[in-house]
Amino acid sequence: MVTSEPIMSDQSPKPFQFSVLKLLVFVGVLCVVCGVLALVMQGVREAREAVRSRVCVNNLKQIGYVLNKYHDEYGCFPAPFSVDANGKPLHSWRVAIEPLVEDTTFHATFDYSLPWNHPKNLKVSTPFARHFACPSAGNPAGSGFTNYVMIVGQKRRAPSGKEVSFDDHPDAIIVVEIVNSDIYWTEPRELNFDEMSFQINDHSKPSISSHHHAHRALALYADGSVHVLDESTDPDELNKLLTENLEDASGRGKRQP
Image (cartoon, rainbow, N blue to C red):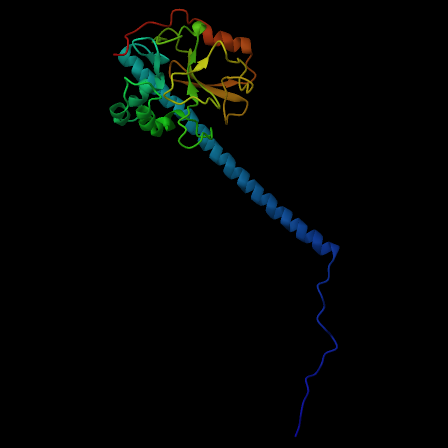
């Protein structure tokens, strides 16, 4: 009987041999992959932010269009806020133009006789906040905060409940962009001229400011055009820009019925 035995090789499997060269190659490939992924992600973020920036500009243009539509009908822009019989603020100018922005749903459900923060009005108004919020603001879901406000105060000649017409001043600033306003969109509260900073993007106090326009912020002019205000703008020049030639701008035109 013939038997056989497996031939045993004298060469056993070699363990993984570490070398500096292999490690360097691996690290190099990993760095290239990570670098490419980082560039792709940065490109995606920049593309998304560019879209949000364009939406923000378009939001202000839409507001400008509706404000001028309101002006054509009533002969003036809406007052910064409406007041009741006792002079108590009820709602912001944004409430006055909302029916012109989209449809009649808001107008049919919002109770204009009640203040902005009445539970009934808060319930029906929150879904419409998207028209008055910057998409880059990061406002909490359902917060209803706005990023587009008027500038009010005695020097702005719009201290309370006064309609304003800028027929002779198409380059007057009527609405500005602001970050972290904590202002509910129907709330009768705006950027106060007497308390604001005139430095663009001054985060130490309320100011004209932006979430996504680097070193700049947006402003809506009376003629419906949207302009960029740069951080390099001298505060005194901005102060002058906000007040110049506005002495006769308020109290003209027909009152909103």
